[in-house]
Each structure stands twice: as structure tokens, then as C-alpha cells.
Amino acid sequence: MVLKLYAVSISTCTRRTATVFHELKVPFELIEVDWRNRAHKTAEFLEKQPFGQVPYLDDDGFIVYESRAICRYVAAKYPASGLIPADPKANALFEQAASVELTRFEPTGGKAGLAYYAQKMQGVAVDKAVIDPLMPVLDKTLEGYDAILGKSRYLAGDTLTLADLFHLPHISYVGLQGSDVMTKRPNVARWYNELIGRPSWLAYVDGVKSTLGY
Image 1 (cartoon, rainbow, N blue to C red):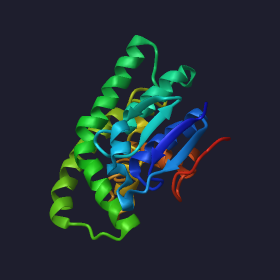
Image 2: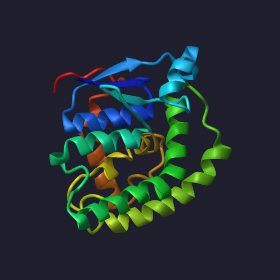
Image 3: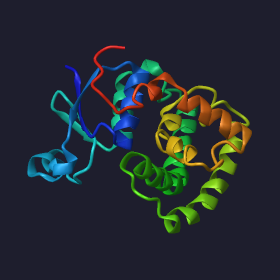
Image 4: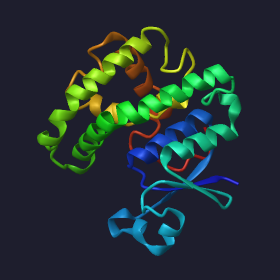
């Protein structure tokens, strides 16, 4: 049974999940949600995703939502990938890195990334009153990232994990908006450039699409 991803093809969270699916070489069918006509707020949709957001995954009747949870679920089904390490110590470092992404990067980098995404994809002007306070905090966070990445290739060690991939696509939009925050430090720049150059990320530059073969 092919995974069904109910989503908006240009959504940042949709692209996060599709990028992970691509890394895992897992076929999936994208079922486009008509967000302009608020299909994500209908009773039928809310039955599956009570917060009315995309994406959600249907795996032969098993429903899971929230992009990071979807990625974790599918990576757990394909443990040989190593995107979620099995060894207790490696797994602890992965959970540590995943927590850093969610609690330290996302509040500033995620918010800034979404603002620049809206500018690029929807022509919405960036509110400098929102962005300007975020950037110094993000810059300080990335100082810590540079220290971590000075000791290992990735955030949880020398092997790629979901913790790295979770940063996509927000690091891309932050990095493309003209600031040097993602490239001013050598270790962060190396990590950033590797992630945005991965075939799994580049596969959906023009929007996520059903992918039944790789």
C-alpha cells in the first residue's frame, strides 16, 4: 500500500516530509489539499487532522500528522536507513540534536524562514518589525551550532539523521534572503550547503509531487 500524503505541494512542512521520504526511497502519493478554498478546515479534514493543518499521512488507514512525527514514523518503518539511530548512545545524541532543532532553532529560524518563504512564494512583504528581532537570536544559536559542527559532520555525529533534515526547508529560506547568518561560520556553512545540495531536497524545488519511483 502506497503512503498517501494529504498536503499542499508548496508547503514547507510538506517539503520536509517529502525530503525524508526521498532519503528513504519510500514511494508516496501526494493528494493536494485545496487550501485556497479552505478544504483543510472542512469537517472531513478535521476528522483526520483536528488542527486543520497540512500535511497528514494515511498509511493504509493509520493516520499521523505533524511533519516531524510523520518523518519519525516512516523512518522507524525503515530502520536500516539510520536516520533514527538504534544504538542507545547514538540515539541519545540524535534526540539531543532533534531537541535543539525544535527548541532552539525553530522559534527563530523557523519563524524567519516562514516569513521569507511567504515573500518568495506568495509575494508577501516581510515585516521587518518581526524579522529584525529574530536574527540576532538566531545568530547566537548558530554560534552553538558551529561549535557542535566543529566536532562532527552532522548535529548528532558523523552520520546524517532526521535531526539535520528537520531543518529543511527553513534554513534554505533564511539562507536565501540575503543575510549571511547561515554561511558566516565555516562549520555551519559546510553543513548548510551540504543539506541544501542533497538530491532529496533538490527533487522538490518546484513543489512536492507524487513519487512512486526513484
